[in-house]
Image 1 (cartoon, rainbow, N blue to C red):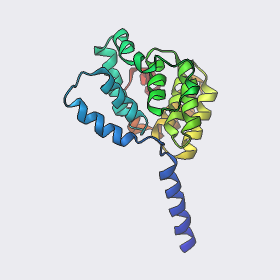
Image 2 (image 1 turned 180 degrees about the horizontal axis):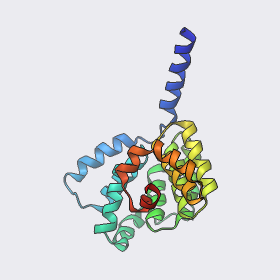
Image 3 (image 1 turned 120 degrees about the vertical axis):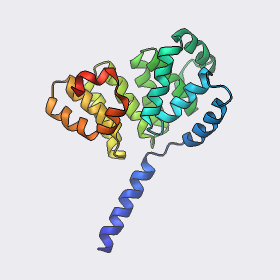
Image 4 (image 1 turned 30 degrees about the vertical axis):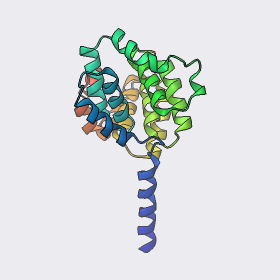
Length: 208
């Protein structure tokens, strides 16, 4: 009995610590949220908050903020605001600033350069290997360019680090696009809460 309890404690501890990034995203969320009280329309502050939420697995809040970019901020204005932070980058592998690397990666997602986004998320995971969300974001970008097998591999790696609904959502969509509807339904059931929270048009055919 004592051995069983010990194993459970060890497993729980491993799951809770596995997803810890080197960067203090929770502190960034607090600081940025406070700053937004003074300037709610600031593009960089809103973008920073979305990036921070994405790195703690709060996908709903991250998507909500990014949706605002699509409806109220022109892509030209967004790029003009973000690009100065990345202007001296010739090669992202020369950098280890996790915030700026995430700026670059999600900028590529918003601009629909998904292959470049995948490369950036892969590098982020390489230098921040306990952050499973980088794997999930790479997997989501891979789905966009129809590389479903690799997306499934990354989502499975993320799940091996910690159970989370976003990995299941990505797997469900990948299986659906591959025509494996039984597995798609199973994964959708495992991501039910996130699925409903996002209610994204991109997933409507899948959910129906």
